[in-house]
Image (cartoon, rainbow, N blue to C red; front, side, top):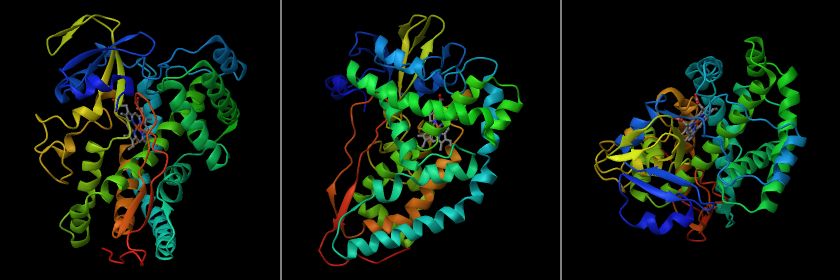
Amino acid sequence: MLFRSWGSAVEAPWPDVAEVTDHVGVRHLVVTRHAQVRQVLADPVSYRPDNALDAMTPMPVTALRMLAGHRFRLPPTLANNSGASHPRIRAIVADALHPTRVAAQRPWLTALVRDRVARLRATLDAGHSVDLYADLAADLPLLVLARLVELPDAPVGAVKEFARAALELFWAPLDADRQVALAGEVGRFHRVLRDFAATGGGLAADLRNAGHPPDVVVGALFFLLVAGQETTSQFLTLLLHRLAGEPAVRAGLRTGEVAVGDVVEEGLRLEPPIVTWRRVAAVDSTLGGTPVPAGTGLVLWLGRAGRDPAVVESPDEFRPGQRGSRRHLAFGAGAHRCVGDMLARMEAAVVVAEAAPLLDGVRVIRPPWCPDNLTFRMPDAFVVRSATGRPAGRTGF
Ligand code: HEM
């Protein structure tokens, strides 16, 4: 979903490119069709990624001072970097997330999820409710990331709080008091990252040894700690919630008629955790007949592009394997395409394979609630309980 304040326009049939004014009076062009979203993503010269991490609500001096006090800086590193250093930084991160290294984590993750699912089933069988966000999905991606990339020794809860604070600070509509509070939280953790970047091994050392300055090492770690785990834990929660309402898909998984990989792709298409991503026009151009003057901020509606009837046979239906299902843009496209896509897919495949049977015979007590945010869905909980009061079904696949 886009900002809730854009809701009435969302209900109307959107034009291919829609002009919207945000809560602080800034004008954006929202790009809604698959072909044009792809066109923008594939052309980093005309449409640069420089604004990808700009705060949607400009920060008051008090919040900026708070960040400066923690020596917070976010130089162009990965998603917001259109400079010459981008391919070199990206290559180092891509090495750390190489598909072979990702595949090597699969058995460990499977064992962990299987163990958690067994405990959750016992809790459900005992008649209690379980939160599939907090008790299953929230920390899994961070635990896997920490096995792939050397990270500062910080408690999982502290990393999650910092990451969610960052997503709110940069992408939510906020008042000044909240901005100051969030700036304090983000700044404090940034300081932890700065210390780690100076001495840490693994990826931090690789970036240092390649000659990248300390701000760049911190910036890359900052982005990775947010993008590399918060996105996926949100996706796992949203996908499980969606599957709770798709009994035919779960039945297909049980019999083997529906492939886990197809479920993950259809989930990315219909329930992407990142609904929009930004670019800024570097030159005058037109998109679908709409003039785009240089300097215009573009909001690429990835979620809507995934439901474009020009690409997908049944755009609003969850039909794993249907024509066009895999052509979603949930991971972006082009030079900045998500470098963690294989990791996210592996994690989601393990969770679907192991946890989908839990959803048989449960009722949803509390669906995920998502706060107002331009880009991230940030579900807060997903609580279920046995539907009958009797033990939930034990069928597996
Ligand atoms: C379901 C989970 C995920 C989704 C939906 C997602 C989505 C995205 C999107 C939309 C972009 C921007 C792409 C563009 O500008 O074209 C991106 C970039 C990026 N993502 Fe992901 N991501 C996910 C998981 C991950 C994970 C697990 C990691 C790493 C551990 C990761 C690391 C990155 C990095 C480093 C970039 C910047 C790439 C660059 O600028 O070169 N992401 N992601």
